Length: 394
Image (tube, rainbow, N blue to C red; front, top):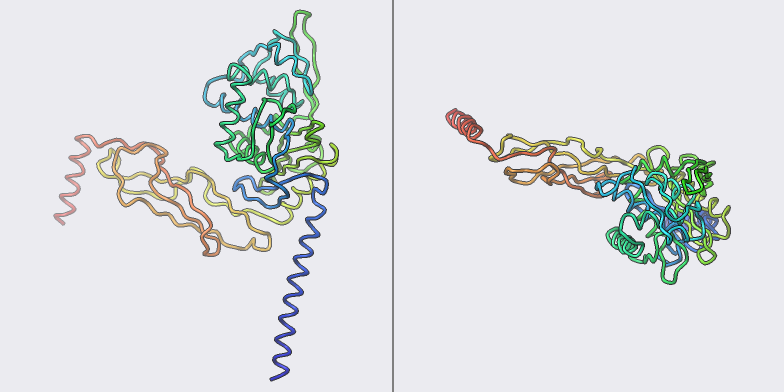
């Protein structure tokens, strides 16, 4: 009996020691990640899940990472039809004299929206960012109001923008986590931006009263030259903010976003962002449900010009799992509303899809109508009554 008790105690001690050793190993593994940064966060792109962080909610100067919000609002304006890529934008006195990183445009010079976005993405041009803000909103001040509204919509609780480009201003602050939120929105909503964000070198043509001249652009994000799977995104530096970067990358169907703020120098910020991304790719994978727009069933429609409507997934849901749980099975269950009557608009919610990992509930999302269903016309009603009559008669 005593031997049995001794064995049990030994086993318990062994388990405790193993747990402590694993915890210590994990702590040591993350200690060297982004060691000089004032704050950082690593999130999985599709789900937004935080995988690693340090002081992620500390409000700090974001420098030119600010321009991620500027790019987001530019793309929103294009998507809504307010502006086009080929619109010509006149550079104001205010925009031309921003200082800091710029492409040295002159007052009165005209550039297309496409080329100004290229200047923002590649060269982090303050003059281009402010010019676009003025073009969209009428003034930089009004554009900043738009930036702050969009930030609130995205849940960026600790962010206040004071300008469109990120030059240091009292009270112009954000956090590593807030920056990851706007980075995620830009990359998920406008993935085509990655093509511009990863251009290494390009040119624009200055057209002024003195004639035309070519101006070279060189990407400030040096990670695009060496990090496997890099998709963007944006660097930042001021003496107050120190060296910052929001780096996005995708491997094996998983997208990650690493935000580093206040690193020691420019080279180290890239190394630290790379360490964060490496950690994510080494330790996690994603389980993905049916792609957005996948037909997952159908439901009967009352009094409609169609008898049934197909239900499709409104979004692609992904769930992050540790690699040692990669064998977990992702399943889902679809439930529709008890009764659906016409008219039904395309995209209207008609049910819910619930996801389970090895039987445990992990999330849910709407199921929406794949197309419009109008109200039944007289001919439709005669057909329904005829079918119902003979169905009852049987």
